[in-house]
Every structure is written in structure tokens, then in C-alpha cells.
Amino acid sequence: MSTASSPASPASAAHGEGASVPATALASGPLNGRVRVPGDKSVSHRALIFGLFAEGVTEITGLLEGEDVLNTAKACAALGAKVERLGEGHWRVTGVGSRGLSEPDAVLDFGNSGTGVRLMMGAVGGQPVTATFDGDASLRRRPMRRVLDPLREMGVAVVAEAEGGRLPLTLKGSVAPTALTYETPVPSAQVKSAVLLAGIGAPGNTVVIEREATRDHTERMLAHFGAHVSVEPHGPHGRRVTLEGGAKLKGAPVAVPADPSSAAFPLVAALLVPGSEVILTDVMMNAFRTGLIATLKEMGADIETLAERSEGGESVADLRVRHSRLKGVEVPAHRAPSMIDEYPVLAVAAAFAEGETIMRGLAELRVKESDRLAAVADGLAACGVSHRIEGDDLIVTGGGVRGGGPVKTHMDHRIAMAFLVMGLAAKEGVSVDDVSFIATSFPSFLPMMRGLGAEILA
Image 1 (tube, rainbow, N blue to C red):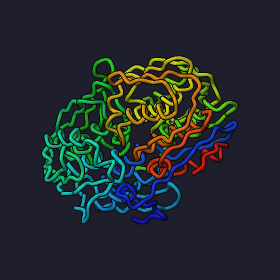
Image 2: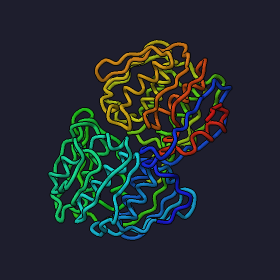
Image 3: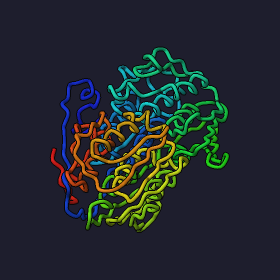
Image 4: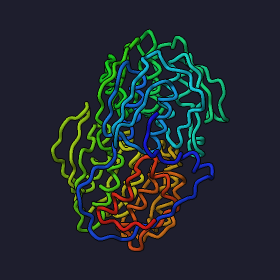
């Protein structure tokens, strides 16, 4: 794989070879400017993986060049694709076809990326190859059985695994994967995607049933690369996704839109810091990714949608965000899949809102890069914010935020960014213990925020 100045592996940092980097965000003056956050992480992972599976060339623009995605690019190269970096965010993948994967010579190391490793397990599971998957200390703690269970039903053999179905583990893919109808036990786009990827080479239809609909980037990209996919409603909030077997994918161009999960941080910062006005360009507006925007608008946020358009099969728009007085709301559990990565920064917004904000159904936060529910609660406590956890619900009482810290980030990039955002509007600012892991998803976060006027010391 040809790359330019790839960042250090997150795995090495997690195993103690890299030093933590503390940082402090100070109460700032107005934030102003027009910025584009990096490309969407979910689409970036999938663009590389579908380029691996496709026949011919896939040209990708706007690719997120964070450590998580770079590790997926390395895995695609190890599995036989030709992966080239042509310029900033501009990559070319020459694929091997739907049954052409090569057996990798070494362990596939995904660093901190749950998305990369779970999707690639599905990709390898439907192929006649054996591969070992690993990651950093944080990723080794995350559950993999939710993916391994359906893959076993499709004929994939788990040759070796760490205790509890965790990394490192070795999969022996199926020579003839079995088509499967599978109802996901928890709302998870990663589980759904792994099953669909394993089903590409299966002779019959692979069906995934969701009681709560999750982000649909895999379905969209399957169709974009030439597969036949149908989607039907299932129950009040769910969907039934059917992939016709024997798909032959063809290389296709992918323009990656700006990541709404990354846009959430400057967006909330602009809402909280008095006098701010920020325009975020090219933000993905996929209906399964806009739960945070819908919630913030219910809270009274001044977010204006400009120039909505379609690019690369996804809806995108520019967002004008102005400082706003927020009020507490109740966020329903069925909205969680559309904003699961944004709850840490929503909790920060709630800390400044008038009254209580109740966030329902956050069980999935317990199995992210950290136990995010506990990490958010601990961070709120360190900054003097009144809150409580009731079952899987988080209730935050807003008001004046003292700030302080240090907030323990637990090697979680979104915890680090969320509490730095809090510091920009808190009376005493906020310190966090480590910002090194921000590079996994948003390597330009600190310079971008400083360019808008934020005072962040690191």
C-alpha cells in the first residue's frame, strides 16, 4: 500500500509505547468561520472494503485519513487489493473480485476501530481464507460475539479467540457460505454489515431483520457497486434488508461526504459559546445520521440547513450554526441508532441547557471504545454537572457549568473531544487526560477548532 506520512499505530500507543497527551480547553470568545470536517468514517471504511471486493478500480475522494480508516486500508492491501494514495483524501483501490481475496501473511491490526474489524470479519468470513484479527487494548475489550454468532451460522469457523469472544481471534472463512435470515439482537449497523458482506458470495438471499433501523450506508454502497438489495419496513421502527446472492461488484467512484459525527463537535461548540456563528460544509444528512441535529433543534438550537443536495448517493448540506439558549428535552430510545456516537457531546450540550435532558436507551454506549455511559457520567461529575443514570438512561440537569477536570478519556476519542467542547463554554475551562486518540477519527480537530477561535492548550 502506498501512503504518505501515515500516523503512528494506535495499537502501539495503547500498549504503552506512546505517551498520553493531556490538553485543556479554556473559556473562549466567539467561534467564527467556515470549515469542512473530515470525510465520514463509516463511508470511508466501506468504500475501501467494497473497493477490495469489486472488479476493477474504485476511486475514492474525501476519504477520512484517520488511524482507524488507514488500518482498514492496510487490511485491504494485505488481503490482495492494490491500495494507492494519490493525494489528500484521494485514494484508488484496485479490487480482487468477490471471490479473489488472498490469505494475509500477518495479523490484521485494526488499532482502535470496531467498525473496521467487525466489517472485515464479515468480508473474510464469506471467503475461503484464514485471517487473524487484533487491535489495541481498548479494542480487545470490546465484544465480538455479536458478529461471530451469525457468521458461525453461515459456515465460518472461529479457529481461535480470546476469552469472551474477544480479540485477538482467527477466522477461517467459508468455501461455500450459507445464506442466512438473521434478526439482530441489538441495533447494530456493524453486525448487519458483517452479515451482508459475508453473504455477497452466498448462493441464496441473505436477509437481515432489524427491530430498530440503523444507518444504511452498507445497503446504499452495495447498490452503488452493482448488487441487488431490497429494503422493506419491519414493525414500527425496523427494516428487513435482503441481498440477492452471487453478487458481482464492479468498481465505482465514491465521494465521501463530511462526517456528521465529527461535525457534531464544532456544531455544539458554536451553540454553546456566546456570539458564535459557524458554517459547516458538505455534511452528510442521511436520515439515519441526523438524530443529533433533530434533538438539538428540539432543544432550541439555531441550525440552518443550506444548499441541500445529493453527492455520491448520499444527501449532503451546509449547516449554519449560531449560539443558542437550549432547553432540556426527552430523547426517545428509538432515536439512539441515528446518533449513537453523538451522545457524549449531546450530554455536554445538555449540561448548559435549561432544565433536564433525558436520554433513553443508551445500552449500546456501554460497549463502545470505552464504557461511554460511565465515562460521560464521570466526566460530568468531574466538571460539577448534576446528572444520574437510571438503567440505560442518562439524565442531565443543566445550568451553569463550572468545568475543571481532569476528565479521564479512557482512550476514547469522542470523550476527549466532547469535554474539550465543554471547556470552551465552562467557567473554569476543562482539562482532559489524553487527546492522542483523537487521531483515530478526527486528526485535524485541534487545529480546526483553534482556527475557529477556540483556545485549546495541548
